[in-house]
Length: 170
Length: 297
Image 1: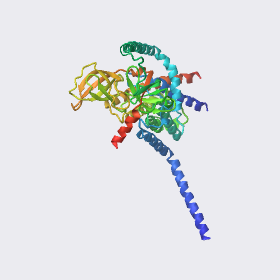
Image 2: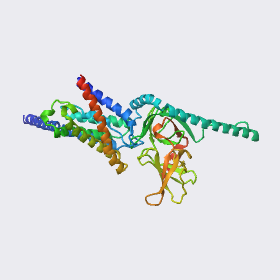
Image 3: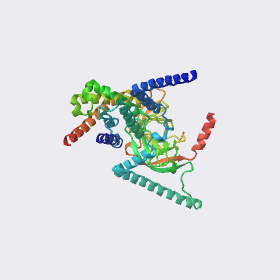
Image 4: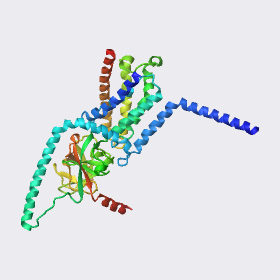
């Protein structure tokens, strides 16, 4: 139950952080971090895939409603929600995964960052391609995907530090 | 007797089939769910229309309006200084204009003897003041949320401007809030604008890169343009009346097929510091639309 509340607060908090703070931060005018997917990335590994997908879709839909985009975030987050478990299995064996939190501490540094990078990259690529459907500026698109991915990773890195420190305290 | 047997047999067969059907669903539930949800997302994406989007999925709905007005009540303080300066400037200009009008009125009285010259809002359009409660300028598809809605007389496809120049077009309206698509959105209906000196008109588009500049395309190549020329609205559409400030020419170049000029326009409005705006209600809008519709039939 505590775990459920913890994750719920994480979902709501990250969406609020994204919409009210980070959407107003613009690094060189066009680049911005998309931190809200961290809520999806750190869900426990033993959660059922159906629930993961539903949560991913709801997370994306909330972002869509709050930023007036039609289904773009929903598509991208649902995609990474499906890819999450297979990607985890790429790096960690299934026995090791059961009943484990997904964090830097429990998975090990290298594994966690490989996992995060892969999903962040897929999410950003999907989202930005959908975003520029009606309007193609390939150069901007090519610049946006890696730079925004890096920014997002940076923010996830910071949040992961805060999380692990709080775990150590309690 | 044989009828009963056939009946039981049929029930058994149907149950067996249902069992397999549900087993299939259970086995592939993840894949099915994924496909259904992605279809929903794509449905939203491809049925999206700026002017007819359902209010549920936009920031004009009540919940979002509430959230964004809370946000604005906090962040509104950050811009107080800039806003004050802008208001002072506007105030000064209005006072100057007032003085000018008063002197004109005096003159008028002296020479003709007609006692009254009534000042009123123009017959053609009226202004509805509003505040920006959510400003989104970092994305490709930007939008603004205003704290005025249907109750204040705002309708979709009305123009929005502030003291500096044009801001955008209203796209959706709820009872108390409305969403504006600013010039900074590549999906925008192209604004018809013209150069004030030469009256040559073209359409204003944004290239999605820098929020200080937009482009004026389709200007005929024989028009004489120089840096710093003023660009204003042309009044060709029912959205804006003629002569509202858009920006100044920053750079000019020949378009891709050399049949027109492409001008880089420095926008007069600072989109990252928007606060007080006015929605322009064009009183003759319905009439223009009706005539245009009749003409296209």
